[in-house]
Image (cartoon, rainbow, N blue to C red; front, side, top):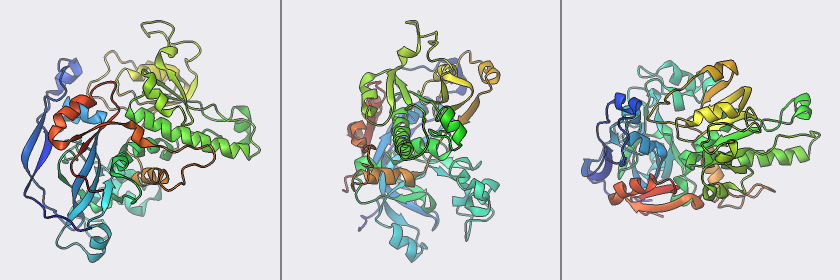
Length: 431
């Protein structure tokens, strides 16, 4: 695919200096307008490609995430171009880029990992080792087989697309290392490819091995079958987690029917506040319940005896700092809490005693495998998704509305509405 000439300037949604961190903790920065720290500029310089290990990406579409709204309120203290979900085209490579890289990448549609480890730094040479490589990235390059995914999420010197010291996707162009890029299969439309990053974040729970619907040992399988799982939150991330874990459950169910195992865990349960959102995953292998059913009182302060300590694994994707309290109540003693939420504000009156007393394992879960997510999306369009009782994803059902980049502020305002699902910014239509 031929690429167009690269302009000198571009439009971009830029986050200005965040409010003081003390205001976030005290709650004094609460605002009815989450956009006051975002400015649409018309003449931001298009970045130049710094080394053969980088590419200039022309953004086609970008997705608005709850993290973006948190950043506008001061989360991570970020300033720069917002956004981290995208699909784009490799518009330019460094003049010293190899012919192999030009053939593989130039003019191709891509998504990308959002964390830039120091193994991507221009100072590194050869296989990626060099003065710019930390111990985490060194391990992740293959010298420690147990740490092959560490650099993707945990380089101590990392920058993060649109989140930490790295311009993001709400502009017409951006930079990303070749190491971070993933080719988008031709079958996947731009509208769907944007979901690769949030779907990958959901796949991370599986990649971390945090849920087992069918125990490997026969004694455990006959005793109870597998993990009882609760997902808290019917926002975009919570629903993506439900899509992934529900399908994992259905595949395990199929295996069980052809094996000697007699028992299996019940389907994962997703709790949310909005029935119309829960309905989006009703055929995905999960049970859906309104979160109000967890409580015995209208004020939602006392957890029902039928739900308290019921689940082996509880995944908090509420995007609300107070969701952790409910997650702790639902989790059984010695169970696992998986935290997917990132919030600008802290939790007022938080007490860690239940975690200590119940000996809970608390696990953070961040970015996941983009390649796995793209393969899941591809199967929707090539007839490979219907494996017996495993339904297609049909991620288009989550797109509430699209806006041009020139209306980015309106798009963010619309995305902040509780009834909204996914909002996308369209920079250029190429497909």
